Length: 192
Image (cartoon, rainbow, N blue to C red; front, side, top):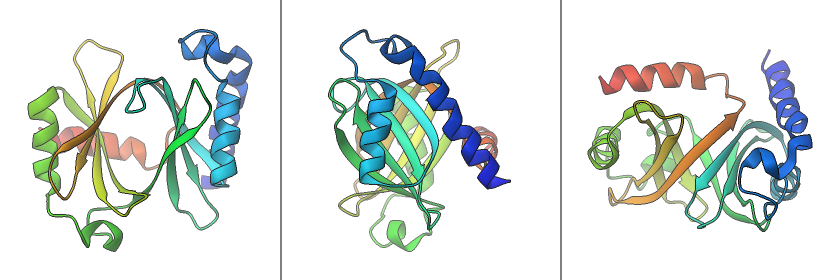
């Protein structure tokens, strides 16, 4: 079933490519989604499981966040500048804060990271991911939904210092990892 899900998720972004930059919402200066997918696949081969469009990003430009699952079942997030088509950040996801890659240097608990994000931005936690940056630094990526808005804040909290190190605004998402639906329900019930 997972392989069926993967192929469906990969098909969805391809179907939207025909809409081009206008779909992204930033005008004719943007690189097509196809261009960013090609850039991401030149860095990491695998199945595309999710694409998010970030109108406000750490790169200071609209960004496609492309999640790829490789042949060893490792998930990678690649950030592609929607204006240049360049990949400017790569990180890997792990299943939990207990994963050795994450836990060996983490000092901040998940609860502390949740509190940091919600104290600063408010809203409801709808997803939480455990990420390891290219340099090995662990971070919590927390998605916050704001009442009455169609967008989400993506807040990245450094798991060593507890500082907020990135904030993005997600405009849309294509695809969903199979376990993400449960994660979103658990994240919101845990936050209650």
